[in-house]
Image 1 (cartoon, rainbow, N blue to C red):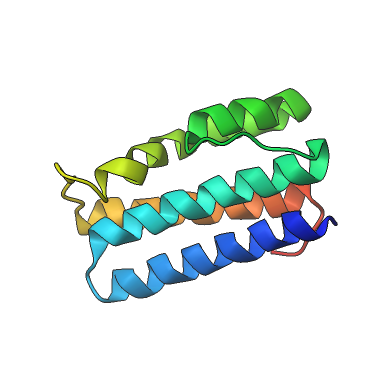
Image 2: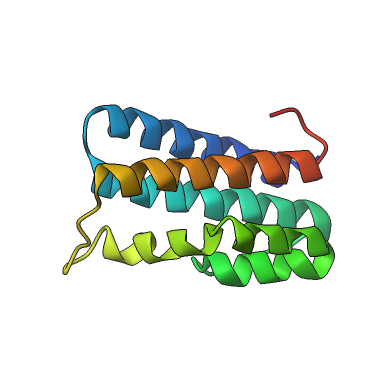
Length: 127
């Protein structure tokens, strides 16, 4: 695997772990941000490995679409609503900030984790 793709996977794992730790501390707004970041980095890792590039975007929808051009199975990520994480990139960090409930934060982590498992499987890596 390309070194830069591996670095993106490691950074995604760090964001996912951070979201889980923050969840335990009740920091739900920041949980959502790190979940979005994890999903974004997982998708960019896939694009780097398969196409040797990725766009400068924070749109999970756009990244899923690009991955789908390489492997149509990525459409599944729309079914698990991974694209809904993209609203957390800006709206969890800058006013007016979203208020994120415990359930929404839990769901953001679940979705980010599912994206990670999906991407790792596609890259033939152990989860």
